[in-house]
Length: 424
Image 1 (cartoon, rainbow, N blue to C red):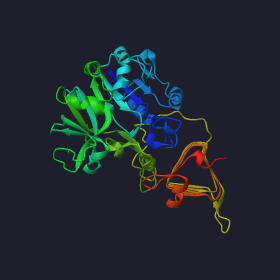
Image 2: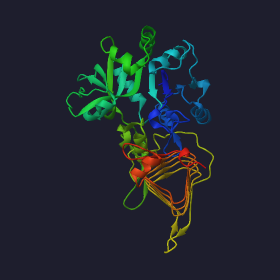
Image 3: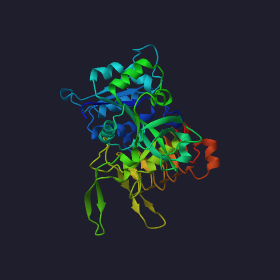
């Protein structure tokens, strides 16, 4: 993959994720306790042996850039490897990035300098594992000018995505944005091909296209018009993406074993965490005995910048009535620096430096960093933003009507709490 350049779109404003994106861009949102969303895309690049990467930040980029500089400074210029951070520089005019195509157009000179055979265009805010080597091989085998990664979604979900119309060889014949009557996959009337916002272009085709067409976006503008003039193919993600991984299992005798699997269970997993409900769902998919998305595979590791916090600690173990006071964590992920002091955490994801006080309960919730949960507090099906101080005896997620008067509550009924909701 020496001749492939990856360009990561990392400027997403993420308005539907407010208040989580009040002070940071969507790719910089915490995920899974210790990661940021952008780590997943960058890890896919490294695991696919792509070592030439350009990251395009824009909105609220400080947290993202700081994270990349601290945790992703791993590339060797002597080997021709690099990760360049390219915010808007007004090279082609006094304007910010106005869309995916416009952001590439404004940085075309960086692509010309790198001179790759193909350019891989990625979103920096999706949750998935993708072998880009298989994606490129598919692109080359089909002699495509551009290949679009497509997620096989149910037909009734088509109004949420850009939908590809394909023939039996998966050559793209049409592209519709959020259609009410979508074209289904040939031979499968219950599914559609939804664009994942992941593209691979032949470099000469990409640069020529951007010179001739000044419109801002690939999905909305350029790609739909390419189907007649270029060889555009869809990549059926679930069928073709096969992640080889090393996982750990426990047999009936209780012995832990390492097992190499040619197709990991989460090879077909993909989520665009564009809403608070999707964000909560994706984090919940990490919990449990056999999670839908496994971050513990040794063959497809996920990298990040590890903060310097002490280990997780649980304290108090009094299980005799009437003074039951036990620090307990069940089916959950808990990041460094957190202390569960006589409280219960179940089916939840806790980020760095969370303090759970005695007799409190946290269930089915995502708790971001530097949160303090007071004594006897009860939290269920919630997202607790960073730096929140939950008062003692507070109840969150148990009465939707009351929660709506004080907090933001999503369509699914997830209560979202920001620092401003509990002013000091």
